[in-house]
Image (cartoon, rainbow, N blue to C red; front, top):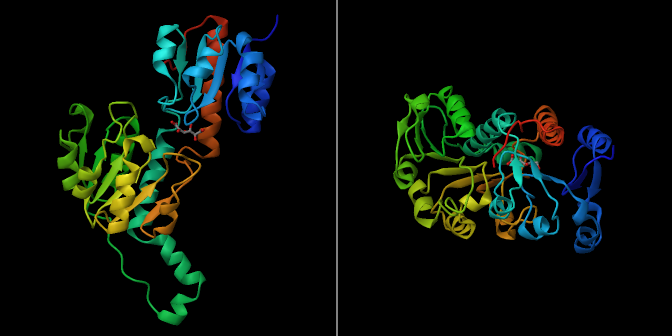
Length: 315
Ligand code: 8YV
């Protein structure tokens, strides 16, 4: 029997690529010099798309694949998939929730510690000889016992909160409704009130049109000159221009960001600021988690073509 044809949008590690190539006939879009010509040639035969969270599948790609049945996303976020186009054609979509939750939360907390304690600057202080030449490194702010706000208490936000309890922090969160599993933490319906309360504001919302720029200039100013915003969700949740302006003028103390509007290209102004910690969209980037994500991506493809129930459908 011939293997189902799968359009692959971006590269995967070999431990995923090899089994994907074994089980499916894979057409690698990312290797094509002319993506439109590639889609015109192979699109009509494509039954499934294998993509990554940040790459998704846009309306043009979906339209180029008239026999498309499933989009399997390597990532929990599926905001880059055109869901309306999928609904209109009954195309199913799967993602990789749960398997990455702990690692994403770990990195968010690490970014908070790194920024609050000035670890990047401290490392440079040792390496460039400042410790010997200038003496003691400037004092930084503590994390222990201070106020944390979690904007979006889904799976990842909850794991961030659990870790923060270990630092004796005062934890509050904002979401569409209070969560019964977070009764020890303060629910604040209004994100602005949460921002005003927080020394550290974690942005852990699943991104959508509704959450676009939920962190705007007004909210950023509420976090304030002593506050730190940590974003491990999607860049679209923050008004990036307002964030840069607040970081440049000191209206916001600092930021720690794993995601950017035009990633992997960054607004060059970020790189001139020493109050921003930048990471290369790497919150799920451990060998363990990426292996589990790849397995789940393939398990959803396999289940679909075997006529079995999808493991982690979002549509
Ligand atoms: C990426 C992510 O998918 O889970 C998500 O939503 O954005 C990430 O895990 C990862 O960078 C792999 O491409």
